[in-house]
Figure 1 (cartoon, rainbow, N blue to C red):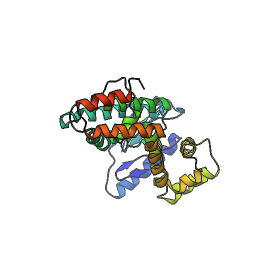
Figure 2: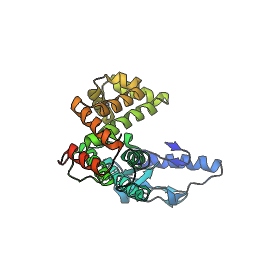
Figure 3: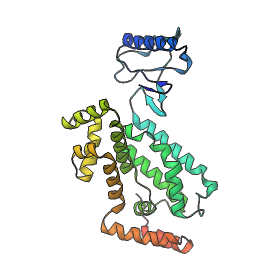
Figure 4: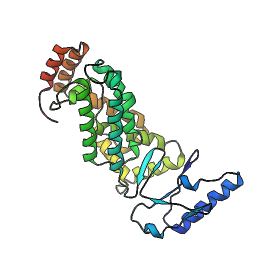
Length: 286
């Protein structure tokens, strides 16, 4: 795979990997270019057919180091194929970015809640959701992201940590981690439509209901939530993404009523309304 000057070679067998690298070297020599071996590496993923000390791959005469973690286009790849580790690191990036905006009015009392939510959605959250649609995350990881996100907004709004904040997050326009995760999957499906090869692979796996493909299970989760067929999701990923967003913000009748009350209090967010808001969302840990 290649993106501008970033190249990723994937192969099961060492001898085949050597041939791939030789092919790249021939191409670079033809165009008077030279790959930098010091900026290149090898990562041994999956079932570890080879021990690290067995791997002797060279580029331009220099041995390439075997690493346990590397980055490709900003997405971290580790030798355990564990995407959850990458996502937990991203949570730290969101936190640092959020605290970095303290001088702009993120910390209480600061700016109005809607503006704080806008800054969070625009500058902080993308630090963690970049590449999220390509990752395979556990429910526990998504829960950790949600807890972190909720705590950041509790801090930002000056609300006690033991408060139920779900409806408040909806009222100010912040989407939870599970819905964000599924929406990012829709974005990946849209990108798969850009080339005939990836589009045909996607369609074939959906038609065959390939449950061995982990991504198909994510597709099933979206379809189950919206009560649609996988074929519809495959054809209209943008529409499905929008439906997930609408479904999240709509909620049930009780939630709608609470959200309307929250929005009224947020229109003039002062000390008195803040106390009313805390009383409204109740003191219970989520």
